[in-house]
Image (cartoon, rainbow, N blue to C red; front, side, top):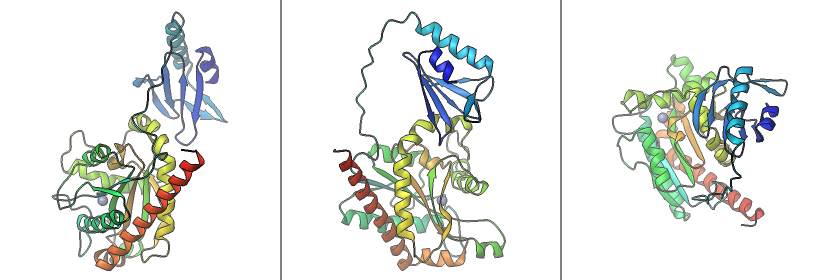
Length: 336
Ligand SMILES: [Zn+2]
């Protein structure tokens, strides 16, 4: 692969986490992903004969694709006159390198979509109550706080991230309760909080959680709705994921610290990744919080009480403050 990059007089870049790579020449930006038979050329996707493969630290692509790429790019770049590329001024600083001021809180579900149901409560009510308490906490600390909904109304998944973008948010927090549809015995066992970032899922469990949260879109008739991201969609998301990955993880670290020792236990490692539609459009660091399992009586009882809701809001607010400080310190090391 690197040899093709040289042939087309471009530079080669490898993104190990997403397993994607790009070749940038004077005229073209080509992007590829291991295992996905699509590439993009200047943002337009094209089918490949075969998906690129990773083997022993080398990337392999089919001969047919390699020929197509090098002939196309060299043929078109050869007669090209030198081009002066003026870097475009970014609309805003890259997320995570500017001060954290505006926090967008997204209480999941609402209106005709109740979310998951427990024995005595519904997800949409719990997350709204926690969101309101969190809004007060953060406002008291001087943050500019926005809620995607402040009452029991239905808002489409994609609309939520769009609102966050309009408000020019610095951090997007989507609040949810987890649930399993299983035997009473399993429901007694499965409990705990977990934090999710937008990332290709690594376990069937994470995949299932995203499908459940995404089902809103298919159930309530959003346009072009589906409950899973396609490989091509993941691929197109790669650049943005790369941009916000570090800061999204930084926030989950702060959440892990502040949730430690609480009434609700941590589930597994506490951090997972999957294709949550609600996070897809957000142009900012974004984390989805599963506060606990509404299908578990113990978790549900805690999340239903005013005391439990206040405790959860306090812990999230603490994490936001620590995140803000960490970003501020990072800016100072950059001399901004
Ligand atoms: Zn939910």
